[in-house]
Length: 365
Image (cartoon, rainbow, N blue to C red; front, top):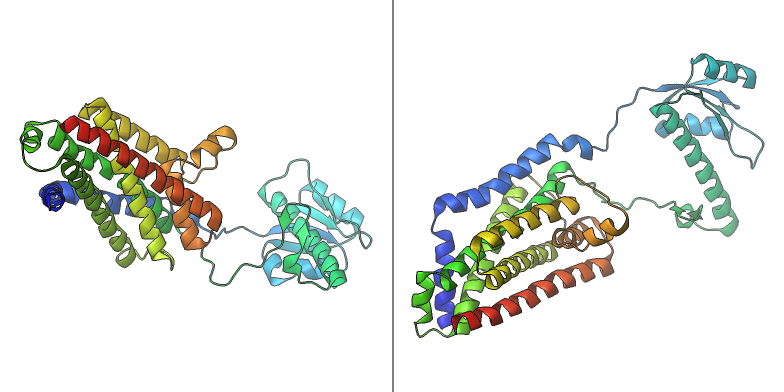
């Protein structure tokens, strides 16, 4: 009963200032809109390229000629079928971007490039590489009586048909996830403020003299701050769905569980720092720096891919753990890695919460 009373008091306290609440909820909504609009270009899957002139030494109705004239490939090139000597001259004079030379059956297509080549020359190389991979895969598939989508090529390259219904995230979809997770981390600071008032202020002195048990007092305050942070996250989540039209997939319970996990982690961390340092300003400085840094290394601001030891550390940061589960739930991810990430997120949150409860209870003794 005392726990519920403390919970209610703390919950109402965190909602009593409408200006603060409006800022906490409104800030991520505006931030998602700004980033989702301003940086939409880097998430675009459409690239407009002017067709490049290419000389082709092959029969127009042959295998290579047919491939280059297919609807998917022809839009990249203006093809000129010619002889080998003429193709070399066209490349040397700069009249064509590249020349494709079809050789004997079983031999790779030869690509002739000028001394200085640009983007479209790289496109040409990619197209030829695709042609040769498709040819190899088709040959193996026919010999083995298998579907081409099952064939492994060149060790690490796999030809895989794209599953129906696969969706590529837009900028708005991406930042709705990363910014909501970042903001949920910052909700721990509100819980820290409530905990500070309940333990290290004149109000805390009065509460310690009340008949409320120490565990009910500490647990009630922590429960109130966690519930408040998650409630504010739900409001932002609903806004992104019904106003921005953000796609959250069909595994909403798992997404919401992950969002609750990041709130729990944040509340436990901030309260633990407060109990250890007993200095509100120190906690603010440490937590704010930590949350901004982890958001950066987790790709919260822009998609990043760090290699080496930095990349290995980054994938276990709280933001990255939440990203792994949420993006995996929406777009399909490694279920084992998602489960591990969620377990780490909740496990560290629960451990820090337990330590905070024990230390907070001793502080009230």
